[in-house]
Length: 250
Image (tube, rainbow, N blue to C red; front, side):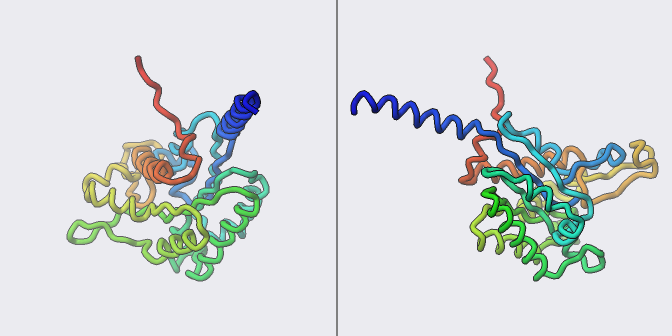
């Protein structure tokens, strides 16, 4: 038995190493605040773009978020099916909707009840493939009241996202709360530099300028991605061990 013990320990260590090095895919589904942008839209940047660069070689990021989509239109347009069908055991699915669900005047709008049911469907179908869902509330819009405090425009749908995640026993990242805190820290002036604001003639993609308090520029997208990474690093998910570690300089 004593001779077998070192061999068994070696097998256990090998199993741990293989599991740690097994490639996984992080799938991202959501709206324009997360999505990959066409060159014609730059410097508008979805936070999923810089997010993809923070992982080691064992992780592949598949950003399937699309501009203007809600939980329902993402389903109706068949965008969820190829994600679901390609999921494998140990993959992760980041689910972030709300911007296009909560505005009643949009064609993509969903009632709170439908929003809840759709989130539950994404979670259930992800789990059925032995993949791991992560629910995120929407990132905040840059809107301040007369006292200089950021306005919470996502309150109801962010609360639903949290409730569904907690009831389903999956990680919830409160990006609404975290991004509001960042906006409060920076204030109306400082937060200006996170969003896609351009003067006329400043960028060839926007010759007449742009004032957008919903979508990020490259800096803003990176700050949002960092907030997500901090939450993952604080979680119990094994995924946190795959975050790229900075090179140690001699």
